[in-house]
Image (cartoon, rainbow, N blue to C red; front, side, top):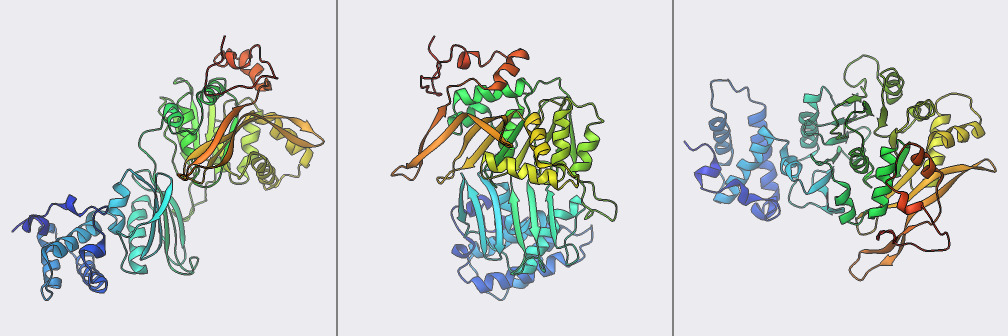
Length: 456
């Protein structure tokens, strides 16, 4: 017997790529396709297969027993086998999109309503589908069970990291009113270099060099931006400038950072969804990290009470700390940071909180996803001082959008603000000379093109 129906009919698997044919291009009768694969999945998955039975032969037999009474083409038969093989050895309908390196996000809203993100653009993927809501839930369970997680009516939400590094968030009824929802964010195995970001227009060479100096000079940095703007990817890229001999402690809800230094300690929170033991939060890990003799503390994202502990670390000699935060603008990031500190339960006056933030943070980097799907760093600014009880941010680099080109791309320009930031002196005192040519003999009345080196 052939090892598979694909071999039997001499049709290579790779000829069934979703870019070429959708489920229903191959199998026009949508209802029949769902009926057949539902019956086969039930037979295959729910059967107790003994170890001495050849799995390939067993699957073939189950498929043949279900489709025997139907007049199917060779392509339809092989397509069914491919779908079932993905159910057994992969993650069902999501198997191929999870393996596609060009796809960065997968969003399942319903069995037939699936979206993917490619090159910053979100499109509906007509090439794949689930049978029903139960099929979606079964796929979720298969993804998270190796992680020690469960999802059911008593635990209807899960946020975790798959074995391949992708982050999965799943919500099922009763929380998800219309049915189970899956959101998967994939991360590249290799970190983008700063040159890659320059090439795609996310920032300019001067901005890149300034950020390199900020990392090497151990400034405390907050990266802000909306959801899906690339905050974690930017943090990964900037981390490449950290000295290889520093002891770095990373703290995350779900491990997404990809640091390549030798001395990296990675800590991850623990939900009580694992077992009945106590939940371990980001705040718990930040507190513990201070006892681990870190040279730097990197928090994947601050969302709540841990913001106070992070600021405390920055204010007590742990320079070079970096974190990210969801925010719509640099000013919004500071407002959210104040709110998070208030969530810590400590009765601290707003004035004292703002003073604390001003003393802790050096640089705020804001990144946005533009209308054309491309990411750009729109602000690099320093936390300057406090005037009239308000924290003042001072721009060093900005991006101004003028509109859209006829091709739908963002039309705009980066600008370098011709003034010497306070952090420049801090970097000079720490022996960082990488950006001297930007600020020495600076003429505030002269305009500068940050894409070009300054003339001597």
